[in-house]
Length: 131
Image (cartoon, rainbow, N blue to C red; front, side, top):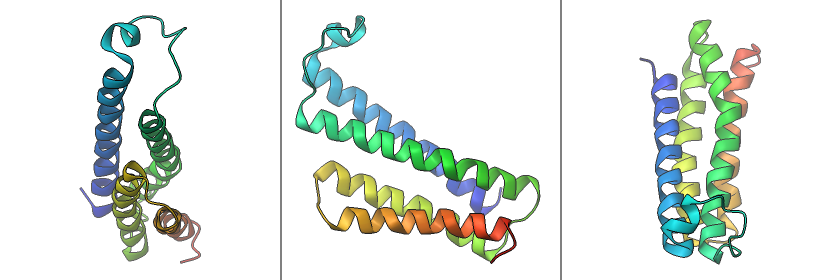
């Protein structure tokens, strides 16, 4: 398995870890029984619970853009140094981004997010023959 697919697998694993954290925080904040029911009348989430939801949503959104690009590169055998670096930038920045998001770090978090977006753009540009 190439670098790109490995980074994609790691990115999927990161999503699983973040969703697991979201479940744990939700149970701690809302209780197991209310979350096991219909959830129609849950109280508003705690600040941290809402933050965890946002980090999960943010990673899921990034992954839905990056995953098809990596799969296209792998299927078409269009991988190269640019796609490998782009995939690595995406994954490692997402790990740092998630950590910064969870601790509530302001200002630097969007910069790290931008590194991940840059990785995505690099893979796209390589697929289009621009890089």
